[in-house]
Length: 98
Image 1 (cartoon, one colour):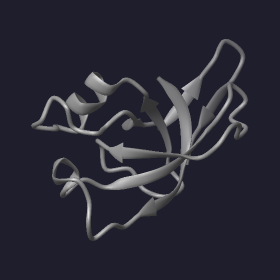
Image 2 (image 1 turned 30 degrees about the vertical axis):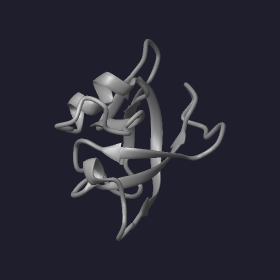
Image 3 (image 1 turned 180 degrees about the horizontal axis):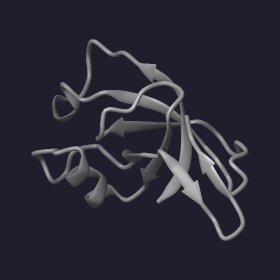
Image 4 (image 1 turned 45 degrees about the vertical axis):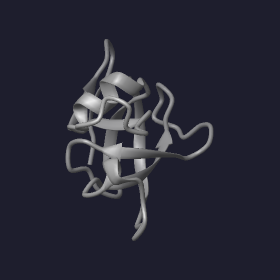
């Protein structure tokens, strides 16, 4: 799992049958200091996240398909949003995420 920020969404009128009814979100990975790094990625939403949310993303096909309730075990889902972060507590710091 990795922290990310939801930065956009994708609307598609034609998509794979296994993705029908599933929300697609662009997420920007974040490092341990909550700074963006790397490239934006496309994830299937499994928890009802929205733009601006700090989320946990999961980059494991089988687990991602389970979180998004995919009925086909071979659905084209490799990355999903698995949780919305409310706060982060480390040894020296506590942050409330909005």
